[in-house]
Length: 178
Image (cartoon, rainbow, N blue to C red; front, side, top):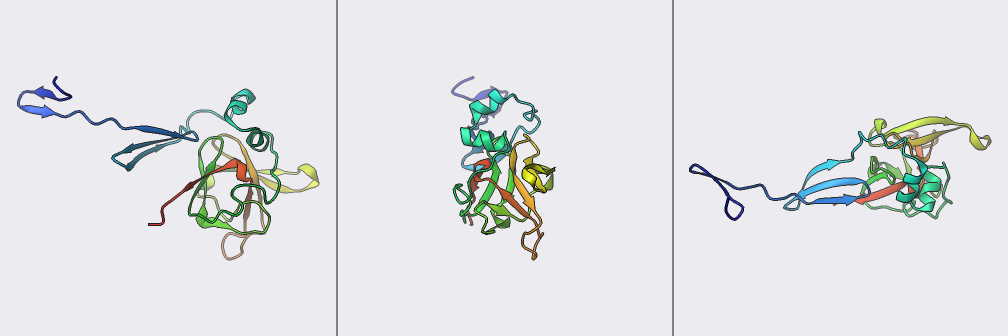
């Protein structure tokens, strides 16, 4: 083998160039010559049952309090409540894509609000009667993290649902509008 080429009879075999891997919020992306090739979230790994120590290392204190202890960030303080960019919102804990900016609307609540997840199989809805209220908790189905709550007071022109989600439970990936 000479200079990266392997000779086999009269045929020369060029080895495939390496594919760089980039790690972004637990989401692996492989890129080759600037083109998107593979998107893997390692959704088969059972991360729902990881101990608190795992999550405390991985998340900020605020993210841990919201995502793992079912907390709520203060209204109008999160980084995405007033975000109007085009893109995808993913779980801050595991990278599972959850909501598209196409379904985001201004609910006036102070939290990012969506009328539909990108895939109903990516979220889990659980009855929540805490704090003297009856509401529906929204969790990431992949990692079990608390995202926010779903209410039946969303836009009637679409689903009528309002997924009221904590900004710190999300990561936003901007998409080109081209």
